Length: 487
Image (cartoon, rainbow, N blue to C red):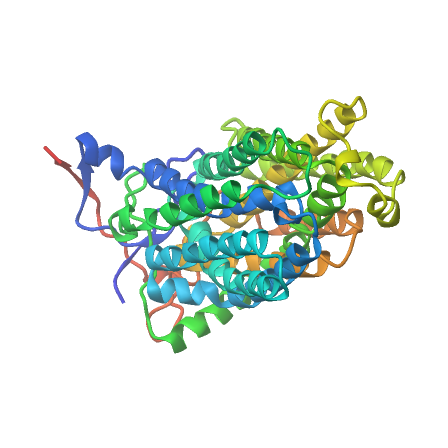
């Protein structure tokens, strides 16, 4: 096993913690390559992949019912999607560490176009076969999404220094959610003059073209082996060992850092509320053009929510532990405000009462009762982004090792998807959200430190035979900087 760096990460961002040993010198590229190889640029490209693929999926889902009048097919497709997602994501960290993050990201991005194609077929031919095809594409997308989100989380959390992790999460989250904004804006424009229950074919076609283009972006991304953080340390990359060693490393990750289990309830609740927000609120109450506008505003508010959390979680004048408690407290308060507000409106209608309303008689953006409800939908988006950003930041506070982060993000998306699969059959959202936050609190108290040391990185110290070496046995070669002129 190669020597590993023991360069400690400082809380002000001056260090990034343990990782694989950098080369004998750190190449400082200049010109276009200097910009292209910057970690921020690569995270932005990662955001573009998710802008084109899951971002447009979110825009379609946010309209309610996958853009369909009959929401049952979309609900069943989502059950299939999140069921396979939950299974695949649990092991996706191992797949990521063997195949590499770029290839894993590439494979994962392919399922989104297929899913949208399934709903395009359903919009053209509303038959039993078309419905079955749409549900099948949901199951395939679940497998692909497990790979994409695991690779995404590993790269997004491994490239920044410790003091900038929330900043990088925000960069990704802003670009990713702009996909939902642009997609919903396109749907709004194409459907502005209709009050029917389904979106136009042109909406699905434009989404399909963009998701295919998004699947090509990973081909242009820099190999993570060549990435250097802003503090000069090399990014630790998976060693691509045997599958046996990789599966054993999954066990080691849980055994040596069991505090991750305390985040599982928060993982479970993180997408639980989508069902009610998208189908039982947006899809149930509003006509199609208003649903499209709501979706655009929802994903726009996500941008604001992620920036708010980045400001709090990366404050340089607070210790990392203080930031962790501040972020947790803000999300806790938001949960009660937003879901209490939602319950106020939920008392006014039932599924039976909504079913009796014709599509053209649903709430329109010009109706006076629209104002309060649209602001609630905006706050739904704010809370979602704040919740997700906090979860990613907490995982990033536990490790700097992409191997370990791949496992953690795989656990996150697996448990999250299990909750989503169940939530498409349920309406209640308040209890799981609060419980998830309560369980996360002891993890923050016991596990989040002001910086991550080599002693915290068991997987970084594990050789290819599965033996975890003591931190004292890991040497740190000197780093000498070299300017790469003309690159």
